[in-house]
Length: 106
Image 1 (cartoon, rainbow, N blue to C red):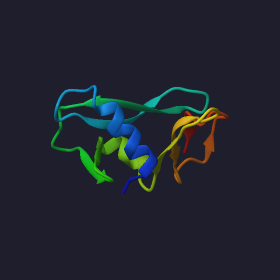
Image 2: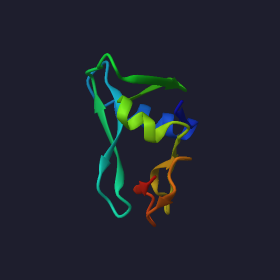
Image 3: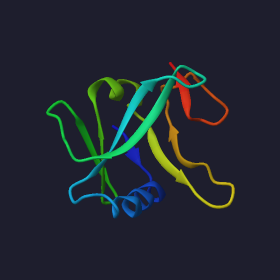
Image 4: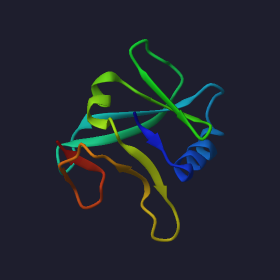
C-alpha cells in the first residue's frame, strides 16, 4: 500500500485542477540521481491493466508494478511554506537517500 497524507492530497487536488478531466497522479521510479533511483511524478489519464491504484483523501495515485516493489509502504507527503521541500516520500524501503531526498537506493 502507498499512503497519501492530507497535505499531499490537498496539493495534488489543487494541481489537478489544471489537468484534463479524469487525470490522476502517476508515481514511478527511474534510474538516476545521486543515490541511484529517483522518484518521478506526473499527471496521466491512461490506466494500464497492471497498474496499482491507491485512493485517499479524494485523490488517486497510480503506480506501475515494477515501481511498486520499491514504493510499498511509502507515505507521500507535502511540506509547504517558506522553507518547505514540496512533495516528500517517506519510503521504508530506501536504505540510503541523498541530502535533498529526491533519490534513494535499496
